Length: 133
Image 1: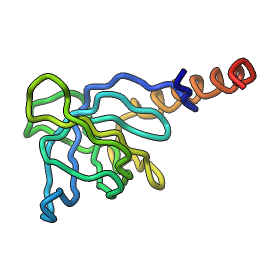
Image 2 (image 1 turned 60 degrees about the vertical axis):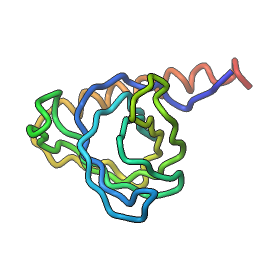
Image 3 (image 1 turned 135 degrees about the horizontal axis):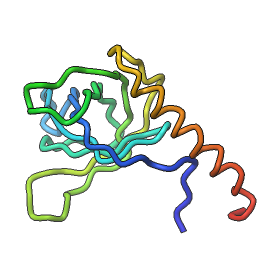
Image 4 (image 1 turned 90 degrees about the vertical axis):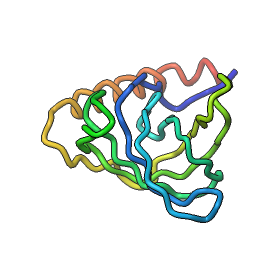
């Protein structure tokens, strides 16, 4: 059984990812979030990258067109796992752990609601921890 310290929240927000690809060249790509938790994020990417690298993330508000990415939050994340999406496409699924704080750069109140939801999920998980130990 897989144990997580917090529940993940499904999300489809756009994401700008900056980093260094397997080729050693810097890249910047607009992508999409699959899910997020207080400690990490799962997203898709076309650029092949290696586990262990640090990427810069700008999470955008909502699910607009590709050119409509207005950053709401920024953070850095350490890539933990990279695998093909399994659907025969050129997309990779990337699991990453946030490094440092997720900084709010937008003025919307949706982030506070998301934080409260994640805090409730963490409290629920902690209240049931003894069942899994």
